[in-house]
Amino acid sequence: MEEAVLRQVNGVGAPETAAALEDPALVGPVAVVLAHADVLARGAVRRAELAVQPRERLRRLRAQARTVRRARSQAEARYKKERARRTGRPRPVEPLELRVVRTAFPSSFHELLRQELRGRGLPDGSPHAPESDLARWAWERAAAGRVVPEAVRELLHCDDETFVRALLLDAREEENPFLPHDAVVERWSRHTRTALAWGRYAIGQVERDVLACSPTARRTRLDALDDAYQDAAVLAARSREAQLRAADLHDRMQACVASGPFAEVVAQCRAGALARFAHTQPEAWRRVRDATAKHQADCPERADGCRRCHGTVAEVVAEGSLAGRDEQGECEFPVSSASAHDDRYALLADVPDTAVVAVADAALGDDSAVCGYGWASEEGSTGHGDSMAASSGEAEVIGICAAALSLLERHQGVSVVLLCDSTEAVDAVDSALRAADPGAARRTILFPESLQLLDRLMRHRDRVQVRWLKGHVGHDLNETADAYARLALRRATGRFPAAMARKETARILRTFGSAQHHSLTAA
Image 1 (tube, one colour):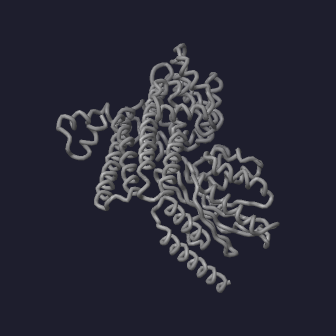
Image 2 (cartoon, helix red, strand yellow):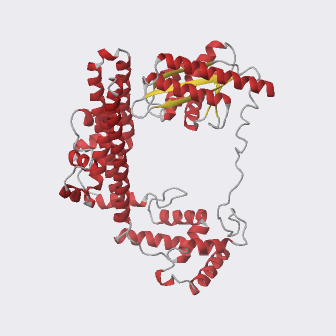
Image 3 (spheres, helix red, strand yellow):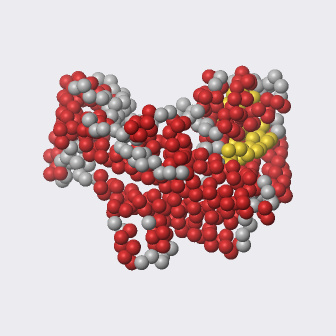
C-alpha cells in the first residue's frame, strides 16, 4: 500500500489507484503508511548529508522529503475531517434551561450532578468533568463477560519498562498481533512516545559513531544508520496506528453512552441535577426560567430547540450579578483577573548576594535524540555541550544539571541559582532536589545520561536552586545560553565544522561580553 500511496504523492499513480485511495475507509491506513514514509525520507536525507553526497542529489532528496511531509499533513487533515463527519451526528437537544444552568453555574451544576451520579451508584468523574468516566463505565458494562486472551492479560499486567520493550520488539523483530486488542490499545497508545524516543536514541548513537570517523570510512556505519531509521519508521507507523485505534475505541465508548439505556440513565441524572439546582438555588433558578422564557418567545431557532442559544441566555442571566462569585445563587461566569506572576522578573529578591546566578537552555533535533545545551552566568563564565534527550524537557534538565555541576565545582561553598525557561524542567529538577531522589523526575527524564547527571547533583542539593525565567524576551544570559545550545546541537550533528564552530563561539562570547558591559554601565 505504501508504494501505491507514494506513487500517488509523486504524481505518477494510476487513476484507478487514486480513486481507490479516496475511499473514506482508507484515511487511517494512508496516514499510517505516510508516517512510515516520512521517517524513511528524512533518513535518506540524513544519510546523504553524512556521506557527503553531491549537492544536486541532496537537493532532490530534501525536495522528496518535503513532498512526503506535506502529503502526510494533508492525510492527517483528511483523517480528522472524516472522523468528525463520522462522529458528528446530531444529538438530541437538551432542555434550554439545563444548558443555561450548566453554562452560567458550572461549579454548582457539576457538584449537584456528581451528587446525583453517586446517589445512583455511578462513577462521578472529577469536580470539573462529572461525566468523564461514564463512557468507560458504559463500555465496560457492555463488554462484561468477554474473554481476554492470556497474551493480552500479560500485556495489561506487566510493568511499564517491560511493556515498552514489547513495543520495541514489535517494531524491530515481529509484529505483536495482540497490541490492537481493545483491552490493551489505550496502554499501547500511551507508551508509543517512549518507544519512539528509544528509536531516536538509537539513531543518535549511530550518528555519533558515523561522525567519529572520516567520510571515507563511514560506509559500514551508514548502513547501521539505515537500520536505525528503518526501526524508527516502523515505530512511527505503529505509533500512529495505536493512536488511531485508541481514538476509534473512544468513539465507540462515546457511542455506547450516547444511545440506548445508558443514554437514558445519563439524561435522568442531568434532569435530577437540574431539579436539585432549582431546590437549592431558587432565586437563580427563577432568573434562568425568566430569561429562557423571554428568549424563546421570539427566537427564530425555537423550532430547533435553540440548539446554539444557551451561551447568549447565560450572559443575560449574568447581568447585574457579581462576576466570579456563587453567593446566594449569583452567577459563576469566569472573569479575568490579574496574574499572581505579572512581575515575571522578580525572581531573585530572596537570593543571597554571594549566590552565583546562571541561565541554562537546550536545543533538540528532529529525528535524533542528540541534544545541545548551553549556559551563561552573571559572573561571566559560560559553557556548552551535547548529550541525549527524549524530549525538550529532558534536554533542559541536562542543561540545568550540567551548568549547576560546573558552577559548583568552580565556586566552592557558594549557592548556585539556575534559571530556565522550561517550566517542565524546572519542576522536574526541583522535585528531585526536594525529594533527594532523581526518580522524582521520572516523568520528564528517560535516558541514562540525564539520570546520571541528576544523581550527581543530589550530592549538592542544599546549595542549588532552580527557578523559571521567561525565555526569548531579550534577557542577556538567556540569549547567550540559547545561542550556545543551538551551536552545540549543530556541532554534535556534524552541521558545523570545527573551524566554523570556533568562530561562532568567539562571536557569542563577544556579544555576551558587550551585553555585560552595557549592563554594568547602565547600573
